[in-house]
Length: 153
Image (cartoon, rainbow, N blue to C red; front, side, top):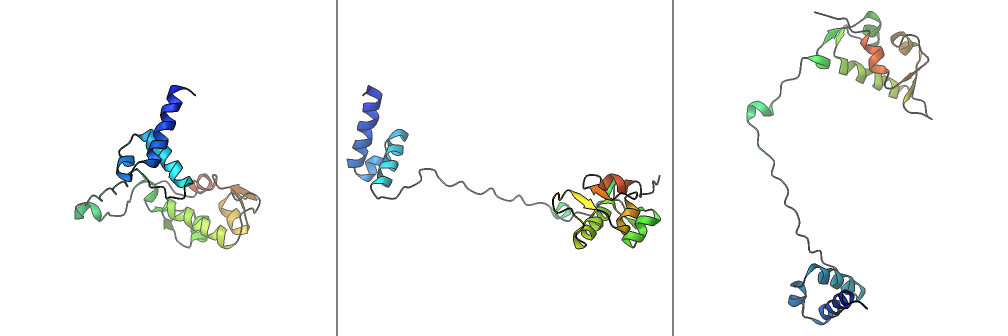
């Protein structure tokens, strides 16, 4: 047995026979061998790591806490084509709301391919929006809907 192995073994045996206060003061090598041996001897293993304190939530001023709804980019309400207006029931909507409505329609009418959930089977109502395609991938939805939003300057 090498001298290092003998030293670790000797310290491990000594920690079994030592009182609890002395065993807690030993090095990490000893504590790891002690915890393994006390678990094997029927004792309970105690974690040496201290629990981390939860970070405190930063308080924000009232002006930042109450955010106004965004009205730019994809959150801007824009007029839509007659086909999309017929599907949504409104002549003006945001891009995000249009995508949400399409997905709720797909899920409620069970139009997803059961073998590949990324694929949508189009019924007659969706074919009017999606250029007459029978199947549409979920990544194509926003691209196909973008043609229905009228550009305003």
